[in-house]
Each structure stands twice: as structure tokens, then as C-alpha cells.
Length: 197
Image 1 (cartoon, rainbow, N blue to C red):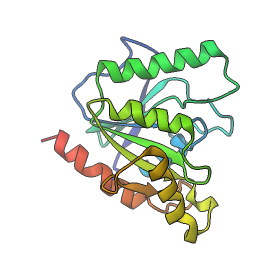
Image 2 (image 1 turned 45 degrees about the horizontal axis):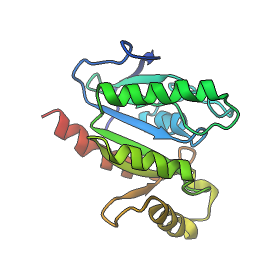
Image 3 (image 1 turned 180 degrees about the vertical axis):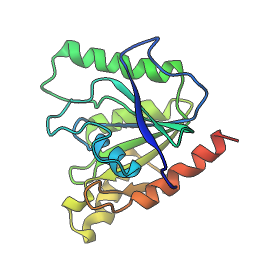
Image 4 (image 1 turned 30 degrees about the vertical axis):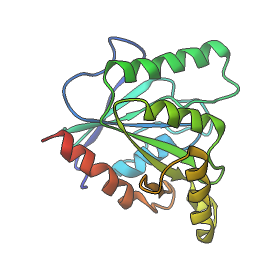
């Protein structure tokens, strides 16, 4: 898909902040520091659009990016940042749950670190997301950190940990090298086309 325009629209911190203008949404979920913001920037071809930090837990709001004036990419706060206090973790969880409760997106892209594998928190997240009225797509991030020969093993291990059938695609991607970006767009596009008919 050709990205002609991409702009940051809003950070939502709770009920009343979430957008409801009828445009389709693709939400990006994943553990803190899994590379959501980097991947968004790569997908949209815009360095620095989504704020990147080496400090986990930097994205604390639900951030909306309007793409081609037709649909939103939504960057969700990362889960599982151990150094965040319990209150902060509760607030993040409430923010994400509030977003899904008010208007589930047409598609959620769950990012799992391809170098680390699926953690118990990723398993919980997938179970939660699969219970919603939305499609879930899994992307294995940071595959540039492992040898190409180990990609199939990484994908197989993630599939096993999340208990995914063979029909559910797992797309290896790297925001740094750009590998898998075209394939990820190829998996996202049909959901956008279906929701704009």
C-alpha cells in the first residue's frame, strides 16, 4: 500500500478521548520495548512520527495516526514493563481495556519479539485479544537480531507458545532492515479494504 500522508492526531488517556469518527483502525499491541513505535514508523515511511525510546514503557497513551486520511494506526501502551509501579501498570491496563471496550478495531497486530520469543505475558495478551470481536495478526519483530536460518525456528516456537493453528500467519519483520514490511502490509490491507466497503 502506498502511504501518501501520515500524521499524529491524538493521544487518548481515557474514556472520552478515544476517536469514533467511523474510520477503520488497526491497533498495534505488544510488550514494552518490542518495537511498536519503530515498526509503525517503518510501515508509514516516516522517521520520528511515533516517538521511539530505548527506555521501555515510554508509550503510555493510546496514540492515533491518520494514514492517507482514510484509516488509523493505533499505537497501544506496551505491557509488562517491570520497573513501572503497580499503579502505573493498572492505569495502562485500564487505558487499553477502555480502548477495546469502547470500539474494538477491525484488526490487532500483536508484536512478539522474535529474538526473545513469546513470553507468558504475550500468551495472556493473545488469549485476551482472541476473545474480542476483532481479527488478530502476529508479527515477530527484531528478526534482524537472529540469523535467517533461525527464523523458521523462532516462528515455530512463537506459534507453539501462543497455541496458534497453522492457518494463523506469523510474519517475521524488522523495523531496522525493512524485512517483512511488504508482507505485513499485504496482511493488513485486506482488513482495511473490507472495512471501507
